[in-house]
Amino acid sequence: MVIDSTRAFAIRLMEHLVVPTFVLDAERRVVIWNRTCERLTGIPASEILGTRQHWSAFYDEPRYCLADILALGCANELDALYAAHTEPSETGEGLRAENWCTMPHTGKRLYLAIDAGPIYDDEGRLIAVVETLRDMTEQKLAQIALQRLAERDGLTGIANRRRFDDSLELEFLRAQREQRPLSLILADVDFFKRYNDHYGHQEGDACLKQVASALESASFRPTDLVARYGGEEFAILMPYTDEAGATAVAERVVEQVRRLGLAHAASEAASHVTVSLGVVTLLPEEQHSSADLLKAADQALYAAKHAGRDRFVCGAVTETLREPLRRISPADDLCAA
Image 1 (cartoon, rainbow, N blue to C red):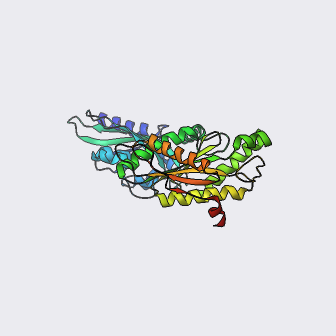
Image 2: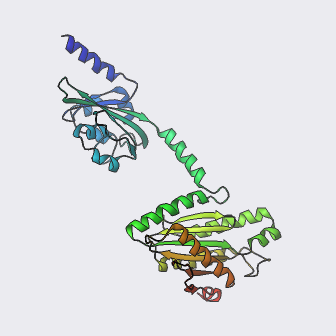
Image 3: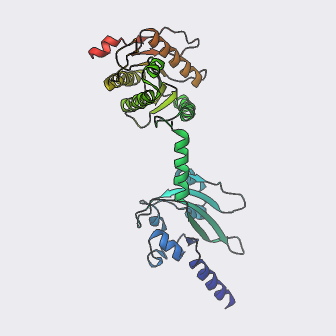
């Protein structure tokens, strides 16, 4: 009688906790679905008790919740199912994870922090798993907003140098590991100092914003990264892109900037704002580094300027970085196209 009353008290206590909580038995059937969990998920306890349908409160398709993983001992599923998580301990303690959940019954998308803890009998057999939930959506959105601010150029709104440097290292290692091509374009606004001197810094800022927009419109894929590299210099990082694809983007960039029609009375390249570009594609080998890619693109950019600006040059990464530049796009040819 004492045991039954204690169990009843524990169940009643969980049902009235202010923290959203549900409990699975050893067969992973829901035995407790407290009132706060009802409010969070939009599903009354009467519809979920005795079932294994607890996943439907959080996801559109069947999948394991954290309590299932703990009950089944399938920790190998954690990486695929959760954005962040702890690793199982040898002492059989609980798990913690974080994830975006679709909440099908409420129509909300929430970022939940999840804890799952086991309950064992006197013989050490699992009899239940308790899962508790915390709505961390506001904190997560604030974190994302701060991260975006840290990664965005304040003037143009595109990625900043910090984001570019991080992405370059990541994509270079991935290309090296998967043996897939990686392309990089460095772009420089021609005679930009003269533009600033002639039209003023406010007009110079407006020019950079429009050029950044032109670069973004010339790069169609969401995997590409357009960044402000520094001053009037920009970069386009293109994973899984061969030289033909990179060249096509370079051609569009040159043409898109021309179409802006921004007058540049102080330019020696044209009567309007133009850009010079260095284009490099690399299939990374062990002896290569991301610095090699950057140096080759910078050399190609210098060659484009030396050849008269308002054009792109395709370079190459070699051991000495002195291989002759393979292609220079004549401005007249691009105009004719």
